[in-house]
Length: 211
Image (cartoon, rainbow, N blue to C red):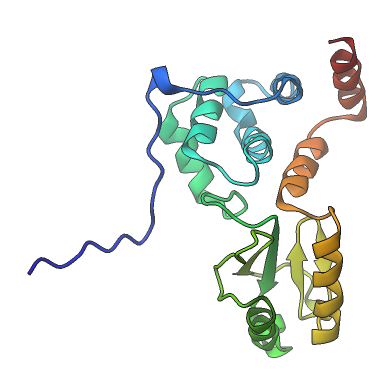
């Protein structure tokens, strides 16, 4: 009996050129054009371009998202995919609206990070690396968040949650369930805006109002 093939990772297949479906909004295109002026060539804008793609494609980089970045930067799919898969900050598979990223490095581990993880697993009814059935939360562990003095620490979108306790987690989860801030998509947008000057952001807004 033939043993089943076990796939450690599932890599998305790139679309054929004739299947390319461009989804960048007009705002995204203008942001990318502004970013091109920051660098000597388009290739150098690949990291912020991937943040734009992660925002535009709803929180993770699909094969179409990688292909669109490759198209707009004039690079190959393989080159863009190589960069995207090198960095953990880019999501290569679907994730929840919020990513709960618990630091389990040395200081946080000593201060109870794994107890925090266990509590989150019990509260959300999922295991590490999984997403809740309602699509709200994905639970992951990460390396050092460089905030050892406030361990244990968890990153949620654009904020750090410090000196975690079960009570603080309960309060945070309730706030996230009823709010709209600190999502995966918002973090991607914040990363894009950081790369643009205030004047560039104003110019983009003016151009969009004229459309």
